[in-house]
Amino acid sequence: MSRALARVSFSPVKLCGGLVAVLALTYIALIAIVMSYAVLTMEFSQSVKNDEAVVAELESRYLAAIAAITNTDYVAAGYATPQKQSFVPAKNVTALR
Image (cartoon, rainbow, N blue to C red; front, side, top):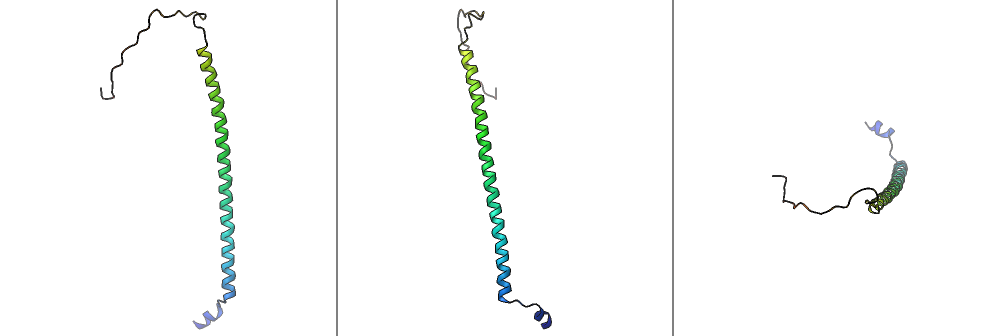
């Protein structure tokens, strides 16, 4: 057994060199993780901006349609004005009834 231990010698220099190599690889891996996180964050931010632009365009189309409906002269379009307006009284209705 002493022969096996004699062949495998752990010198402090080899041990420190191995530790430095492991720490260097860990450092490189952490840098890669942080950079990929930054890229994903930037892509998400860009997708949010694109979605906001789409929503703004849809909202402007919606508001234009509402303005067109509001500004329509229904009498000129052939509709008659109502003679009387009446509202149906609402009853308190729940899902259990």
